[in-house]
Length: 149
Image 1 (cartoon, rainbow, N blue to C red):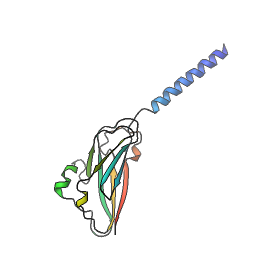
Image 2: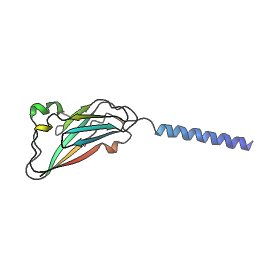
Image 3: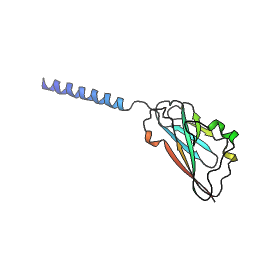
């Protein structure tokens, strides 16, 4: 009888462990943003295993060396990137993205910007409005430096 009890206890332990592992690995999106300062392309990838909800990426430019500040885009070209919830940032709207897939958006105002010599820091935040419960919320921010000689 003790052999059957040991087998039954081991089977119950395996069943509990499998349930805990399954619960911990519940499908979630994981949005990661990249940015090209050469052409203004915003690349949003879902590294998770569940389709994300529509989300926003914010972009903030800060001049970190040299005279002046970040260039101001043409108001007509930047209007679609304005969002009152993020007054000092450009925002890019992305629809849902399937797990393992990505979407790109090229900023329409980017080619018209005139960058003075210096260094510029671009801080991008994926899912800035927090609409997705992600498997890793700690990887949503990306910083890219642009140097203009």
